[in-house]
Amino acid sequence: MMYPQNVGILAIEIYFPKRFIEQAELEQFDGVPAGKYTIGLGQTQMGFCDDREDVNSIAMTTVQNLVEKYNISYKDIGRLEVGTETIIDKSKSVKSVLMQLFVESGNTEVEGIDNKNACYGGTNALFNALNWVESSSWDGRYALVVAADIAVYAIGPARPTGGAGCVALLIGKDAPIVFDRGLRGTHMDHAWDFYKPDLSSEFPVVDGHLSNACYLKSLDLCYNRYIEKLIAKEKIERPTINYFDYVLFHAPYCKLVQKSYARLFYNDFVYNAEDPCFKNVQQFKGLNVEESLQSKELEKAFVEVSKPSYTKKILPNLLAPSKIGNMYCASLYACLATLLSNVSPEELVGKRVGMFSYGSGLSSSFFSFKVIKPITQIHKILDINNRLNSRVKSSPEKFNEVMRLREETHSKNDYNVVGDGSSVEEAFFEGTYYMEKIDAKWRRFYKRRI
Ligand code: ACO
Image (cartoon, rainbow, N blue to C red; front, side, top):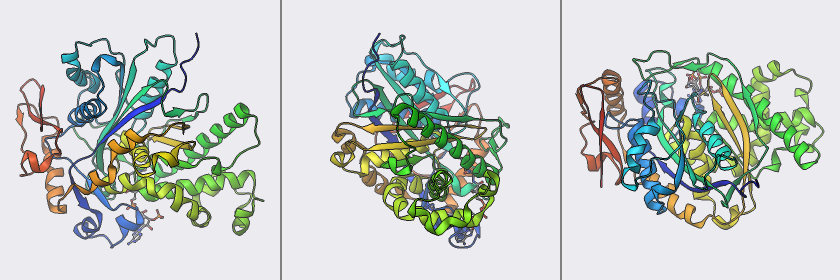
């Protein structure tokens, strides 16, 4: 059997909450020095949901909006994979909740379930979808990938790195955005950097600094494994990071992405310190991996080396994560949506894009795609800038109240939602699903804002 050609993304939709707060105002409210969240973490705003939204509702919103905007028939979807770590049920999948959207079409023959490992579930869902389309199990229909999370933290240093969002990707053959075959560098390991052992709480247990170290170490390994595969596949000399026109990262907070891009330059330096672009960082030759990861001087020096390229190729794609915050599984794909929305479709043709996915615990992969045709429709539909600008600003006080409400009501049954005092029209964009109640048997009921 021949592989189907050009397997990749045919359509993409993003959802994020309508309400946000300013990180500068949160700094004041939290009583931390000005600049800690905005400069230190690189975050400008943060989206949040009250008790009327859960992972099911944001996933339903995104899928239904994608199907309507691209005029797709639910009958033509043969696989649906969800990636999430926002667990509200230990048995029933988000995927099964999404099946209610298929009812009218009569299509119940849809493979796939939920994928869980911190922020990596969306990537696993994507890999499953790509593998299915390229396999003997494929029945010729589309696969749909949904990456959705509500990221909330207990009061403390991690709270400003919250957020919420969902991205849906329609996968099939003859796509304009084509994933490179046989080019995935993966690293999996056991780590206690971020995990959610308390099933009565939405909050993770997080060792933030350890999670940063695990992220950067995984990036080293995945990048080098990817590059080795690339050399073998293309029979070329070791390329540098300039092989990629853009690189997209899982973006828990934007400063980590800047450090990560710098780290890729350091990896290139380890292989070829003689490259003229490294003439000012020769003092960092010969360090072992641990020493290099611990050196703040090295980090700063390589942030400087990579800065011109970062400003041009990476920073513009951080618009959504910097204004919405961490979306866990959806975070990397929100960077993808930003790229596709902000660069003109003509300019993107022929461009190769690297992607790094990291999920604590841990699992990570570096992979890539190429844009082979103009993505005019995708570009037009995403319209991220205007959508971000049409959100409604809230206050840190309100955000704090909502966090308390979510904490107090998480996993309640026989519960009618309270909200944050705003009407459905004020709180949600048109087409958004929201929860109305959870009955005595923990069954959740949703409505859609038309
Ligand atoms: N102005 C400018 N910069 C400042 C200021 C200020 N007033 N105050 C502090 N900073 C800088 C610090 O120097 C530091 O910079 P550096 O990282 O370059 O050293 C940065 O802001 C952060 O300050 P810290 O004191 O190191 O931060 P803190 O310990 O308060 O927490 C952390 C930061 C660990 C990222 C926390 O927010 C967290 O735990 N987040 C969740 C975990 C996370 O996102 N991990 C990433 C991968 S795993 C995942 O995706 C969940």
